[in-house]
Length: 198
Image (cartoon, rainbow, N blue to C red; front, side):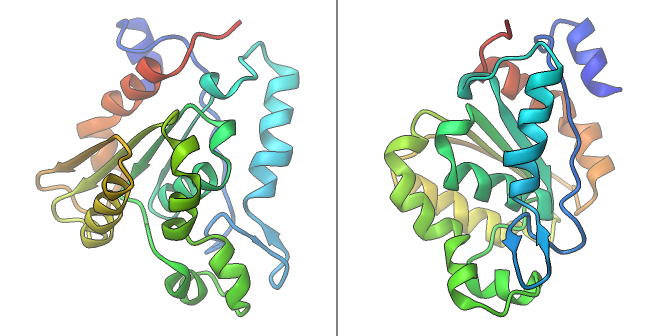
């Protein structure tokens, strides 16, 4: 596994990697209309479960969140909505869209619900608190979501937020290719921006 090698090679500090699935097209939002609670299952159930079962940091500067595609957009949305819970976030080929696209892509009928998860106004509101969070957006030069990533990166920079934004040459929307080219960079980013555990 890439993380294990990164830790063994000294490229990343020891950490626990937990993989979560937010459900088909959930967008990692809580949607009462479909019954899929993609955000709460991670924030209210999974994180407390991990923190009570394993010897890990329980502070924001000891927690990072990453995701690919829908998960990248979900990771960003969760951190923007809950900036005091996390010290770093990495979106890989993230689906970084506003409320209209959230409605279309995630089967949301309620416009107010979709607006609550729109990362654009949420990041404006949370900007002072987001300054304590390390932000990284990775996107391939051939990824179909590159325009959305460029737009969101510019939006964050307009809020005077420091982000690491990288376009990876020749990479399409393929997690395997991302991990081959930049997997260790993702782990290094979290390692450099999070405190060591207990």
